[in-house]
Image 1: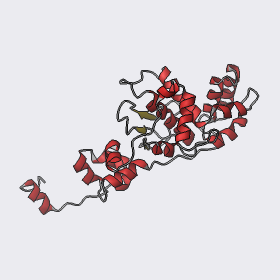
Image 2: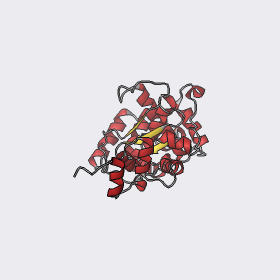
Image 3: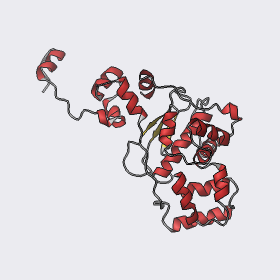
Image 4: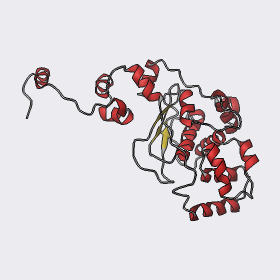
Length: 271
């Protein structure tokens, strides 16, 4: 659906960097995305969703209410499909900081795994680690981490970094460990402190959830003045799906003329 409305509305194809130009280096790829998006080398990404949409990547907001558990899967993409007009879907609601990291992680898959024909078999796979390394480098550049984080930084000392860059303290601790800025023992201690203070479910410094716009805008241009029932008839896509994806164009009640129904069916209704 996104590929169709994106093309018919005249929106450009995706502008994703070729990982071959960076020898698969996640940091260099993240820097390239920042440059294309007009983001400074050390500044925060103001809106991950908007950055991806500017790159021609459609983003679908979560359909289910509520907030996902920390271990739940919250996003998905199919890098090998629709390479020119890729789509990322949030499949569960979650805090804004986690959503930003998940979206950036899927962007990493779209960049690095576009030639992969089969699903990634495990969350511990090299492809998953690479996607998260890319996401982390995109959201909080290495230079910023090295200037800000050390073994002596307290748990609450991570909060200003979260407030500026929109990344959870949990993700920052993991990133600091991977960069070698803190020891394994220090990372474990920080995670224990985080749990004891109830941060696993409710971290301080909330990050706002971002809103999607590209799919809705392309839909409106491709099907001007139409509602989801009419688009369903034209495309064969179920109305219920269109209502979930694009509720603003849903038809809450369709009143049909009985005479018109009889004329179309060639007889009386079955009731």
